[in-house]
Length: 573
Image (cartoon, rainbow, N blue to C red; front, side, top):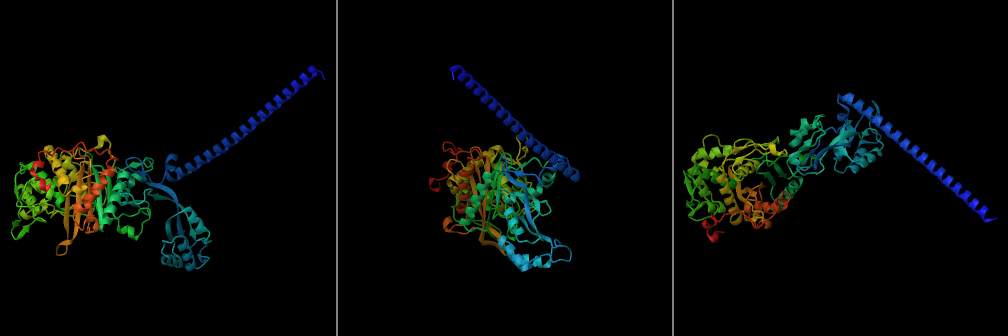
């Protein structure tokens, strides 16, 4: 074969190879188009089916298609959009005794064996109650929420009467977190307790449930508050605890906790006993935390002008009653010393000079005579002494005895005392800048400035030292009050509270920590007073939540208390 013939043969082979490749590529393209067309057809059919299903649902409920596809109940979030309550499909366990037909035995096996097998799947169910319900042939829920794998195990029992219908359920992704704020949803689909009850109509409204409802709380701050309250409660074996973090300028509640908590995802008899909200519904005599409010009222009225003036600190006798301090503090004290060492006798004399009319009006302006101002439905009514305060009662109210309010009352009052003098109602709703209520003036701005100094001194040199978180400029006041009971006050049962604000050079948040019936333990140096148990809770909490709320530690700045420090002997600091 000559060279020319060889070239022609090779050229012909190349052409054939190119043609084969072109044909293969064309066939691949055709197949690809067929596959794509098939998937487009399937997607189209699915879309058409979805439209018809939605249209049927919309027609059945009288709602448009978009509303028919929404969850049965709207979502609740924290102020940053973190979900706190949402609806999702779940399985329930239902006993249907008519599943086998009327007149037929509802169960294949005996009620005793079926109850035992169900108890093996759900160990927390009461086997005896299960057996009784099955034996009686009484239709109803055996359990409101079960996992898909547990539903499969129930099916494996082969009992037709044990049904696992799929229903829309309310779920709380954060578990027990903020349970007293949120509440829960009852079997009838309506909200119970907390913001679930407050927002029930809004969350059920088909026209609005697509948009989540943001609350004022910050999940991170809420978690820190609950953690520290639980720790503090366990350290001193207290019966319960309560706490709140409040924005002093808006009234927004960043965190609110009542301990022990309940689990809204799984309500039982124990959880039902824990639903009582100690922050908004329980009233207490909050003791010496009232002393700064009395002093602020006295400064406003001109009763207290000279902070270096000495006040008689000996026991106060009114008729057959005597007011004493918990321990001798000397024959005379000035106002900074009185707050730092929490003198009942000096506060009583200040309240006496202020008079019942002016002190009573201040308390009314702070909302102490009404249920706390907040949206939550559980709001306790104060134990209020009425219109005419006798002299002795006015004195004792001055240091927090004779009137009982909620910890929320106290938080709102302290916010007004440190924010420039304006009282605003507390709220669980996240507020836009234009939505902040104007509030009402209770204290002069100059009085508020003085109180910031005095509270800061108390945390630095007085009973609030254990709350003085370095760099955060915490100011506050302790309060330890005996609980009233049959036959008078119980010396063995007290309520200890620390009411604080930070940072005191520009207050942004009030923090209240309260313990119900703490005991003297090793952790509290065998002391039961707030200085040893409630104040440390605030001292640990503030450094945890400060950076979250935009308040970073800074030890180069503080409230200027240079004019007050010389009034307190160095030995007392």
